Image (cartoon, rainbow, N blue to C red; front, side, top):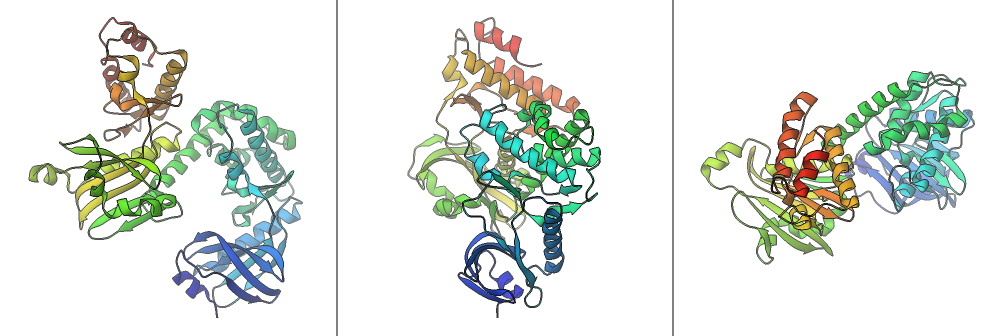
Length: 473
């Protein structure tokens, strides 16, 4: 008999196909859609021959999560809000609980639709329309006194013209039948806006028009909403950086006495040979940089161009200074994750490896995607006589503003560490990047970065003068 214990023991590879005899009929699970090891399994299957979505709760505290999911779906239904119909629920054996809803054929989440948009820049019409649909649905939820505590575009399901609310586990009734108080509505709205990159914040009031068309019962405070958004985004960022260092749905992490490895789970199979022997990249491929504290090379793996950076140990003294600290690969891995989260252009970080002896770090490797582009010294020339085009000026100033808003200093802001590619200026070589908690600590570091970039070109040349005039102080 299938039990919660047996499903927990299968980890990320639960059996397929899987048949369960429910009081409501025979359930056949044909495909797993989401696997949270030892916690919850979500799959597609048939109940008495009818397509259904199945959730199996297998954690030791499964009863509580199952009950929350059931209560949330009923709250949505009782409020008259669109959500997939509940076909079956209950307990099978021990701590194995199930919940079966209708399977919406050809439906896609708003997150899937968002990722498929050709552009997601602020004000882009298709992006605005998609967010408007989510906000109208959220407004209907708030008008009925309900909140969604795990608010993101993946919890809105679009089928044709109908938008459904899903994930009952995160639904709770605050004031059933009565509109939410303004402060709670703002706090919940902030969770949705925090999913967007910071340069969308200036459009939050415009986007609220869609929300207010459905729920204008409470006066919202835009300034307070912005504070909630900033706080929610910081919480999401901390959570993402934590995930980048532990085994989860987004990252596969291997940790033992001899090494630590974190890799994007979607890239694990393609990168497997390189992860097993990262030094292989340096034996038969031309090197981009060799010697000293680091070596860099480009390699083709799984049909993709990658950059592998190895952080070397130069000697016993160097190792003694570094062995108890997180490696520069570790630091750069988290720095790149932070930049990507904030929408700041940098080559995607794919994997990080540390060679260890217990708690002692040795060599380390960082694997990123390769971006074909010109560094700014090549692009503008070394004599400083050429000015950037209008597009280049806008991209450079946008990057500076993003770094300023996030209180980030690069630490080695020379022109060769900035690449021009696909209409953006990309940051590379993040070994010395810092995020400052206060503007006071950030300001001198930013001035150092600013001056380092300007010094790439001779004084009193057109480019030197333009940078000195236009780069934010």
